[in-house]
Image (cartoon, rainbow, N blue to C red; front, top):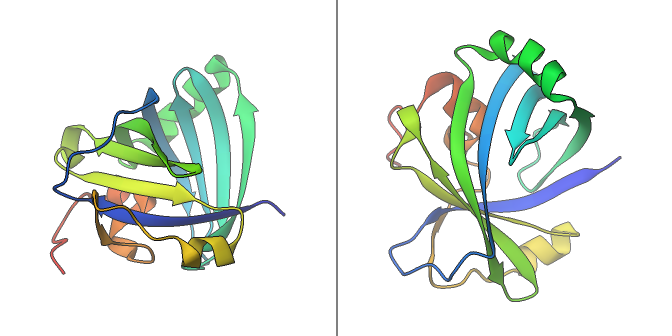
Length: 158
């Protein structure tokens, strides 16, 4: 099964290196269960996908994505009312990988996070974040996109 292995951080105060790509993202949740399963639709730079994530792991979860046509996305999007987020993703090189700087919009305006994906949990644990990363929020459920989409920022202060 395909695993998503990632660490997530708030964006720090240091300047961010230039991005090599910038993509708008619209994301909405169709279902979220108490067992850690979430079903979402996403449009990222014009590409539409249906995604399913499962698991409670701090570093890794099962993730499957299936392509959708624009029409299929449009049919499913209304079902995500009240469980959506909009952000712009900036892909920034960090050593031999990319960091994804997400700048949230609309109700989540002001929130900026950084995600890095890894080929293994060992690589994730060995990663030393650069100075421009802020505090790590991997495993902090308050910053999970599904929670942000359904509950907003709320009281995020630790």
